[in-house]
Image (cartoon, rainbow over all chains, first blue to last red; front, side):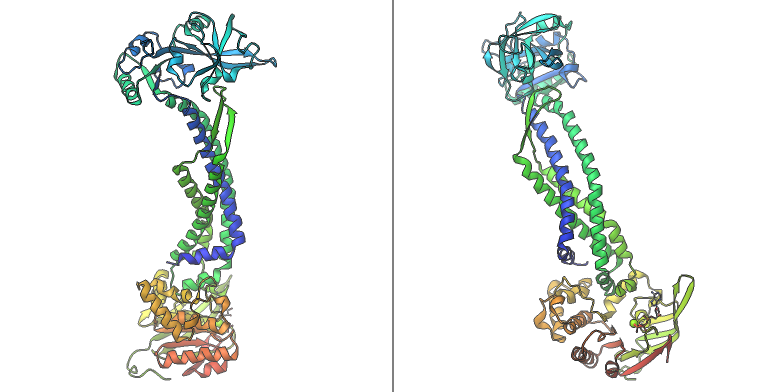
Length: 385
Length: 232
Ligand SMILES: Nc1ncnc2c1ncn2[C@@H]1O[C@H](COP(=O)(O)OP(=O)(O)OP(=O)(O)O)[C@@H](O)[C@H]1O
Ligand SMILES: [Mg+2]
């Protein structure tokens, strides 16, 4: 084996071109890992909006409340499960809820699409993170609504004491709540038995259950899955919200990987040019190595390893650069729920490993043709050079 | 022609029969060597002279397994080099030949010791054994104190002596030198030639050298002349 220090020192001997190539590779790895970290950050930010003791039950095959339709009969049966926690008054913490999209006029004449959630008497108790910051809870049996904080001011009348008009009915605003940044902050909540008839929707979107503990939750989910009376899909609330983030995260991942791929073509070409130059400048050295007895494939391996080292250096640089974005926080509107979400770049060991592998792969790919060329040189031509 | 004591009865180390070499330039075939017969005994120190383009290097490349003849037999140590594959030739060179080039061909990013160690990395020797061999070889060429220096920090003569250390470190049967003093001043050239004599007389190496320098050729036991691809 041609010693590795021959490669590393030769790279160092031409540090300018080596450095620029590593920088190019590093930038691509930076984009690659930053995007993966971002998608990861979005997922974990949205998942944090849910309570781990809560379970959301959707109709089988549905992935979102907006698309799910659950019979009301399930409500009573689910509420009697032993794992379900009780309210202070002794009622099971279970609620049948209905989510419908509502168009509200905006100040600028356009309309905005928000979600109205029909709730049951225990909906607030089920979600301790949802706290009123003004006014009171809407009373059951009335059209009173509570607004998520993110909706205040979004439409004329969207404020405490105001009144909204949709589905040809009036809906007075009696409370405003926060949800610690969760998606509920951009919903309006109202009695499900008033919302359903207004939209001609007799069924439910989901049943929400609060269990006594995370173990109880797992037992509850297992029980539902095994019970043939139900054709429901049960998920913990954090898992549900993480799934809602998946399409966005997937979109970001696909876009990021696509962009990385395009950039990587440039970086691979850069590595190729650098390695061709290395081989050209060191033809005599390689010829000597062949003369003293190193085989063609030793030369091939040596140049390939050198390219891999170049790529790995780019990988390290890019990964470190991406790690430096950890302190950044992004606030944006969730396109799906319209809640403001806050997220950062969240690294994982897997992403860091992927970054190093990606960099090394690009370098190796760029070194392939130069290495082949080096190994195919005729010794005499090389020695004459 | 002189041979090492006690070797008179043995067949020659190098045996060429009917060797021709031609290069193809486009459609034209250029003959370089024509029907060369040559015997070189083990332990000999021979020099080849001749005008530029006469085929000296070509002959040396055939003997050292860097090239194959167009026709004919090249036998070194009883093995027919013309029949060996590229891989077999590489391994054969590693075990049997030491090279000294006109331009030293050292790796500039490696120290003298690391350069000398390169051929040893192809052997099963342990790290400690390699270090011993490297130190011994550099001692022979008088550069034991420059082990950690890199080629750019050494003079041409010193670089060529490092190259000689690299050539002898595996203790090969055959040393091949193509114009080893061609780039050196008188004094450095004499040092290199002195070394060759030591290798020849004391270590009984077989040395085949190509040179333009009559002073260098004088040191050899036998000088052969090559003229337009024909051995005189
Ligand atoms: N790869 C090659 N392709 C074509 N012609 C070649 C090749 N190698 C050598 N020759 C030709 O063969 C002839 C002999 O070359 P060689 O290098 O053996 O000469 P030489 O005696 O060593 O000359 P010098 O003293 O200048 O080194 C020259 O005419 C040269 O141009
Ligand atoms: Mg020559």
